[in-house]
Length: 490
Image (cartoon, rainbow, N blue to C red; front, side, top):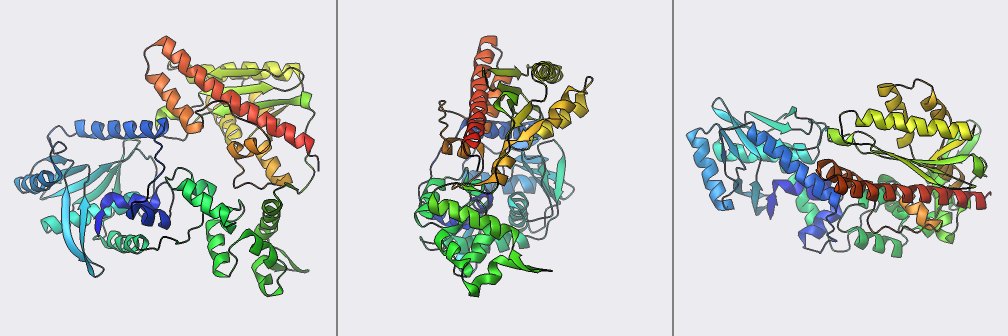
């Protein structure tokens, strides 16, 4: 077998999956869809790496040579004591797990430290745990092992040049963890074509085999398609002979399997929390209809404003802010309102103040309105912005007091025959059809960065118009779910 240090990502990215390792090793085709966000991350990663290269002006650049020449020159430069190397390469032929194997590693940098070298890789990820197994620590461990075999001495250090610019040390263990993981990869690669792996909406999103695996799981009515069944739970149920949604429903009435679902309390037995919800979820999937858990309680349509923010994860710095504050009034005259952050040093603060002005006007027009949103992001960001930039007239506090998390309400009141409770899944279920071919939070982030980097005012305005249109679709989708709930009072 041939192993590359980057093969650790076959298992870990976009989520842990042993089946993906086998499918990729056999060369089964993937759904290749490199969207703008993936391109953005790739470009940002390269920029981050080149910034580290500029900080090492004496580094010998091996990136332009063939793989074989890079291997040869890596060892020559190490023997010559080069101050640093960029894109070195190690290749080791070794017997692993009873068979001949090739192992290849291509770290970003070797940096001389006394009589040896530090191994450093640039990653745009800002936060990770250095001393726990994971794709990045394992990759560095494998680099360390290859370096030690090639030079006869362990590396002086393993380091990650993280997204925030800091250098994070990775304790070197002699390669033990990396070699053990290669053994796991070898076993995963040998899995038969019909090997089972539980699916999951979040787990499988972004994987090139998503369509293949979901189609098979739905066709088999696999128990893992249920939103309420975790990966570990699906494995446990399967080990106990419960593989399908139908088998799960029958198992609830099987005295021999009572211990799977019931827990003891002071008065006897009751369904455990996960089992009660999973049963409702299974009933919804089996019938194809929603199951009402409790009657939903909503304010009158006149008393609602739909609320949705466009922001991003906490990497890199430019993505930490909210770049669009979107609102939509409901009856009698629905209209979209939005505040888009500009690009100057005060743009974030100015957008916050403008949003507070719009919110204050709505609260004045409609005292007691509910700001209806989907998920926890809006509350989190409102609280954060009020802390950073202030809330002089109490508008943010009033909005926070009036928030209605529609996602939580749907989850509390309904079991839906869906694999996810995300708006992109629930919206189409209630009949909302999106019009825009592109879309998604990652797409919006990439477009905003594109606008940030553009020097053309006209191009910026056009891009921001696209983002505004995407946000309006999210607002419309939330409003559609709100209308659907009103039609299903229970």
